Length: 408
Image (cartoon, rainbow, N blue to C red; front, side, top):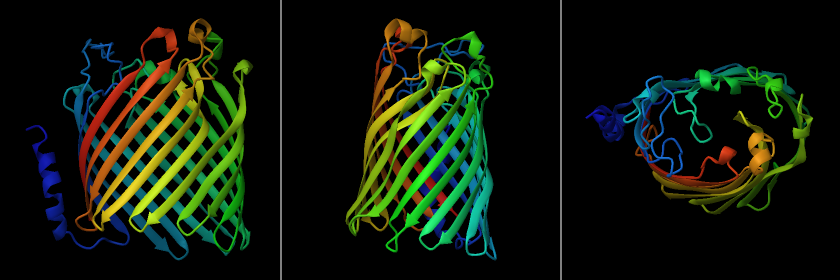
């Protein structure tokens, strides 16, 4: 009964869409609703049992839950001469049946001005704002923690030759946690990038890219713990290749070298190669297969680690069964090496290593262009070697969901 209106909305979405007017070229509002069930919401090991959440009233969390997310939003795409203005706004009401203390309002917004000056200069400048609930995969805090992100950005493109293109970009990223217990991992970083590409008449390209990150955790005091730093700088230089091998096979890849330097704890500096290689194969007009392999260095928001090295492979097939019905899937295998941990747990137990196996499948039905219905399943496992302080971190989860979207 609690979600009766939501279920009715899903059932009637395709019918009511027939009465909607034609989609506007400028103003494109939408509404959506999703209902999902997760059998291990807090991503806990089966041996842990009930966990007392840090809520002030010692309320116990419930392992599984039903979540309803109702979303309303709009997209504005306005062109004035050679200038283009984009605005994307969405706000969601998230409700939990068993763990109601997690009820929250989330948002995802972005505004950008895509400018053009003459034939050689173009770019964009904008601002992105996000507000979303933090996950529970790598935390011992099970209360509500809303992460607010602010991201101003600007990019400049310069084309001095039909085959040569360059791009310069800057951005600032700030992520703040609402829960006082997790504000020690508030994170800020500035990014500057430079990229040069050579593009052939057949639209293949070869490029070189440099990215600089200057990051800090403003609420960390590095001298309190000799193992956790609060500032870092990262240099990432890579070559990029886009190659249409055949009419049905396309390759996109980057191979590079990354160096991470900590401001105070130099023994945790890191230097190594990275890569991200993707092959897209279109065997028929109705099928697609994407294969991706990667090795990446990622910042890690945890009190015992600052970065993690991830190696992985994913397989993503897609089948367009009919013009209105599509089946998509993604299967991935990855390992996470906490080479940036170096904390107390490393001294006593050795370096932590995670192995993750995830899979998801979705059936998407579009009865008319401005309506979409979907049914999805997602499942995964994590196996952890040398978890911090011996606390069991292995888990298995399964999740099913149904959703509907209506565009006006």
